[in-house]
Every structure is written in C-alpha cells, then in structure tokens.
Length: 117
Image 1 (cartoon, rainbow, N blue to C red):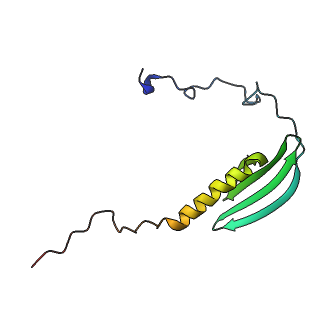
Image 2 (image 1 turned 90 degrees about the vertical axis):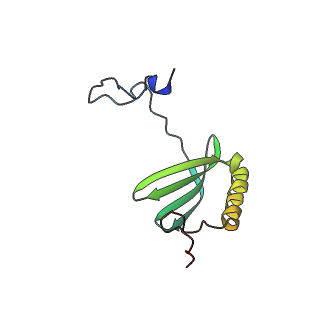
Image 3 (image 1 turned 30 degrees about the vertical axis):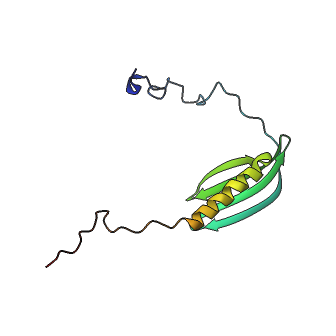
C-alpha cells in the first residue's frame, strides 16, 4: 500500500459538544508536589532559558524551559541522566568551537572565473 493511500488519523475528527472537553476519556493528572532545589536563568539573544533542579516523590530532575516571544517549551532530564546529558552537551560545545562556520555565499551560484583577454 502506498503511504498516501492510508487513511490519516487526523483526517476527520468526531463531532463533540462545545462544552465537552477535547480529551474526555483521559482523567486529569493528579497534582504532584515539586520542590525546587536550585534555579538559574540565562538570557541568550532573544531567548530566555530557565534551568531548574527539582525533586518530587518520583526523584530528582532538571527542567530546562525556553521562552521565546511569550511561548514556553521545556524538556525534563531525570537526575540519573544528567551526567550523560552533560557529556554530550560538552561534546556539542567542543564541536561548535572546532568546526569552522560555512563561508558566506552571495547568491548561491558558482562564480565564473575571470576571462582571459
């Protein structure tokens, strides 16, 4: 079967009443108390990063939040993975410093060699 012949799960949404929640079958998540152990904020260009070390009954974790133009997104790294995360992050920093940036191109077309006269 060709991929475009498969029905998309997003093609038709079942009708729901206006006062019915979108995900009525899923119960709301219970509130989990989180204690903040350390928090640091970092501003880079137009982005604001908030790194927070937290703890809850399931364990410790670091939440990395990014806010750009009023929109926030975040990732959570469990404390058990912070050493691995740091190792890869350091490798990325090293690569960013060692690999030279690409040369700027004016229009993307190859330059014609000067003609001999």
